[in-house]
Image (cartoon, rainbow, N blue to C red; front, side, top):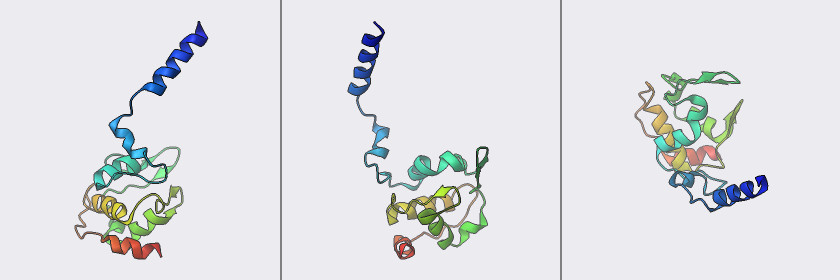
Length: 128
């Protein structure tokens, strides 16, 4: 009886429809979101928290809130592309436009007020 129950459960899981929010992982090599807020939600907030305040626990995740280091666009571009310490680089998983979008979002939220937009061409140049 237990084996039959497990088989029915497995079939039900395999036959369940794909949820709309699963689109984030339609391509295992890249994130699919384009909007800065959606990218932050999918990638960044797990460590930096929804409000950008960071966290301390199993590791130390720096706060992005009110961060003066975000004033110069080259700094966060390099971090997102290459990573630093426990943060992985996302250069292979994000396009230049996605990196610009998520950084523009972070630089204009969480108490940050750096309204100058990051040009995707600057991200492209930093890749080289």
